[in-house]
Image (tube, rainbow, N blue to C red; front, side, top):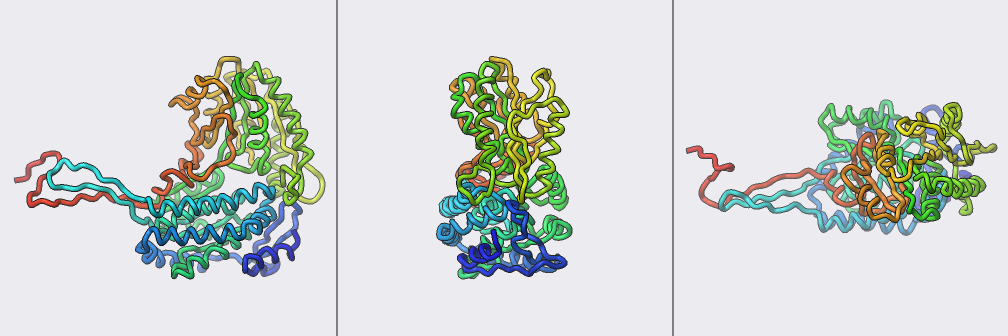
Length: 509
């Protein structure tokens, strides 16, 4: 994308592109499809980050007293602004992170959907009444605003994941301070610039803050700041291991959405054509750069040859449709940067070194941009069933899919393989067997936060809680009762009588 096109997108949002030009301290925004700089941005330092944090903290004192349905009305208006500019925002997501234009449009739609969801929540949040054991006593719980929320987002979903947090936090009465990935600051600037005026017009402009700055020292200072009772962070497991102890040291809360080494199990009764489509999108969509990307495939032996043939053919087609993400005929865009391409190539070399075979794809494409062909890999056929294949245990954030077969009738073994990695985000089973479905959903089945049957691992629907277990961090966002993370619970008891009976029948005469 040319600078003029980028400026036109910002102008369509009634914003000015804040390009400060290349210089010391400026942040270069790189188009991964060409490797060219889109713009250069000024960065926040510790002083400006402190000022924005303090402004959000002061705003909380007023926002928490604003009626919940009125906060919901503001979020509804934010959703309407997103609807009016959906195409321009999708073009920006496409340009800055290389996500295909159709997937980029879907990401903007997620922001719209979460605004709708949060607006409904604003009239339904509530506690419960419990029966007291003491006469003339009423016991109930209520949920109250928590405080400013720090949201750290990743490049692969540069706007949607922030919106999951922001829309719900705002209806809960919490300001949001956004620290986006340095690989996607333009998306953050555009969304912030478009939506912050909605709050400003209502007198709550400081409830939405954007801080673009380096991890050291700016992000570290934010994570350590006790004014943030909740830190919501999306990124790698390594990032979570760095953030969580720092927040825990000050007894704060974390909502972590980290890595996912996700698996699909294909049982003998499965519809193989349905499975092939889901596997291909789950493994190659977003160039393998989703936390829910399908990375491991376990296939029952009796259908392994047939499914392998279908997938090989599908990958050969996909390999011909890698290219400019703005072109709707392309299925796979670029990786985010040259380092991602290097990790992809290094892992494929290690796979071959350890006896694995690349059945399709795996090539790095020449020319500008960071393009690779998604790789379909088969683990060494003679590998002992109780042994692991080292590369498969690593979450390479790139489009590499490992295929391994399990003996007929041994679904238990496939489930053990599914659960045998440190992450526990998303999983899927393809089957027409009711018994297999029930086994998959049993307490000894999939240990992931997301467990799907006859659809893939990738693609979350607003309304269901999103998140995973183990090294994925345990966080839940976007649906169900995820709103509870953004509020504090208070248990209340009212004595409406003249006596003072004590709980548990204790006498204190």
